[in-house]
Image 1 (spheres, one colour):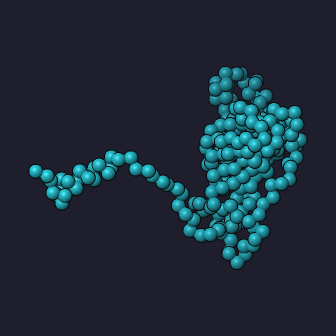
Image 2 (cartoon, rainbow, N blue to C red):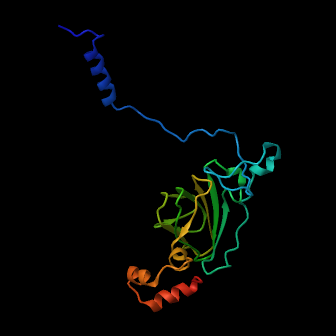
Image 3 (cartoon, rainbow, N blue to C red):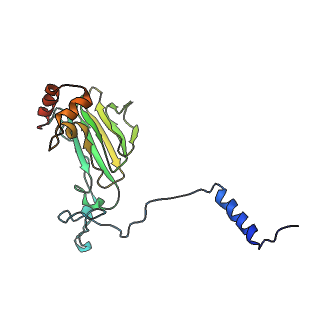
Length: 212
């Protein structure tokens, strides 16, 4: 005898089958509640970025930013220049969840080990030979998951350029060497000597290079 299609047991069986079947799922960030929100950098930061300047004060020029100029790389021993296009330098990015950097390297230039606590990074090599765990050449891209410690080094004979993008208007950056040896208040020597298996003299020597 067949069960009625209206019986509670039959309906429950059908529901369980639907729950157990593999069903494609699509998800995304919620849509913005406004078309744009050019940041008022003079205001305090709110939960999701800066407050907006009045729409009446927004102009077309607010939505353009120049990354065409090569940075000066010989101002530090890292032989590196980073031109950020985040919400602090490009206020139109406020609440949009995106940012970019232009990174220029002199020969041997190094972007030291660091992480981005709020964003995944994708980079496109424009010029040079860049070591990112493996060597990349112009036209190749790399991706660094959020929070993962990474570096880039120009291993080519000439200059190098990389454009990087982030899924945050303020990706943040934590540079390991500065954090460990140049923080204020300073990290205790006993922690660093034990962690790196070196003596006080070496730790003090490294700290002196970072002003700690």
